[in-house]
Image (cartoon, rainbow, N blue to C red; front, side, top):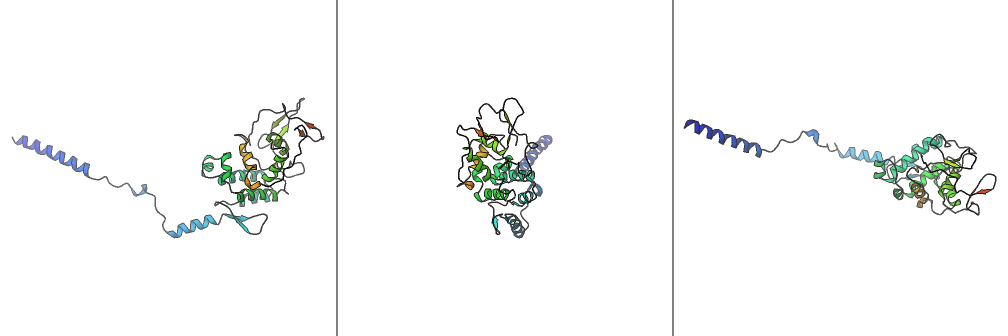
Length: 254
C-alpha cells in the first residue's frame, strides 16, 4: 500500500512539474538580438546634416550651388572631367545614373530604360553640363541627342557618327561594334568624334539610350537632318552609301 501511495505521489509531482514548465514564459532573448536605438537625437541630426551637405555642387553655368534631388554629389565627376580623365568620368557617370534612378536600380546594379523617368531634369542636365564644359561642347548627352536627330533617330547610323562602330578591314565594306574599353577613345582631340562620350551600356538593347536622349531634360533642341537622300550615311569622301547588309549582329559590351 505504501508503494502505491509513493507512485501516485511521484506521478502527481511529475505532472505538476510539467505544467509549471509549460506555463512558465521563456526567458527573453539576449540583448544583442535587438537593434540599439540612436544614443541621442543629436547624433541623428548630425547624420542628416552630413548627408545634406553632400547634395550641392558648383554648377558649371552658375556661381551658385545647385541642390540635387538626392544626397548625391557630382564632385567626383567634376574632378575627373576637369583633369581630362574621361575613362573614370564615364564610369562615374554610369554610377550616378544608377544612384539617381532609384533603390531598385541601386540593388540591381544597372538602370532599366523605364527608370530613366525617375531621374530629375536638374540632375541629368547637371551631368550633361559638366561633360560639355570640360570637353569644349564635344561630349555630353545633349550633344549625342543632336547627332541622333541628324540621323532621324536611327541608332545604327548614330553609332557610326559617335564612333561606337568601326569599319572592318575586309574587301566588302562592313562595320562592327567597338570592343570596350580598348577600342574607344578616351582623349579629347580633333579626331575624337563629336558625342563619343559618355557611353551608354546597350548590352540589354538600345532602349536605355533612347530613353536618356528622349528625357525632358533635353527637350527643345532643334532637329537637323544631315543624312543623304536615300537614307544612307555620308562618308568622308562626300558620297552616300546605304547601310543595309553591312553590319554584323550587335554585340554591345559597354
